[in-house]
Image 1 (cartoon, rainbow, N blue to C red):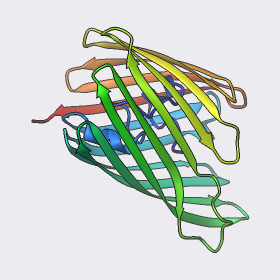
Image 2: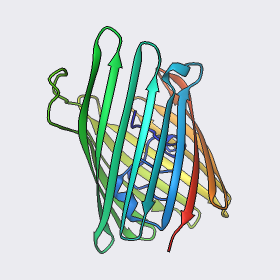
Image 3: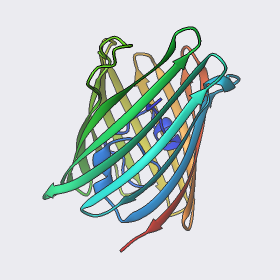
Length: 250
């Protein structure tokens, strides 16, 4: 449920570690220490023709130049299966341009004939903006806190490391390495192009499994809409949309 939480991230094929600004909710928790904004985001994404796997999310937060905090809730479900989660995150700029962030998450599942279970997990993030044109970061997700007696030990933690560099003023390129136990490692590459202050174009590619995605964003004063489509070998085409209200703060 956490992957591709916004249409912007979906359009970048999941390359989320060094993405900052509006539309990167639930990505790297350390990104909350970059920018000056108070924001509210509503997101949803679903495979075409499979409405039972639709996911909806709501996030509220404040990102500041030195620290930030946010909270979100999300839900997916149909008659046989329901899943939901809630999290809160905080970030702090410690020294120079190095920011650290942490998130606590509670996730629950309900499966017909198998009952309900839930668990707590921790996420840790790092983001370092070495220069205006280059930054790098890392995230560890799904670190289980304690054990639920009704569930087996959680062995599905993941970690990611990536970088961003600017290919000229209007374009950002992203490269990311992602590993989630026990599945093979993934490489993600993406690009986002900005046209004036109105339009954003983005596309991305990931390996294992091979995924191609593209999308766009429209900015109008304090409102922003992102839309993306991604190809998946098992689920087919998946689309996502995010509406964001973003208020610049001092």
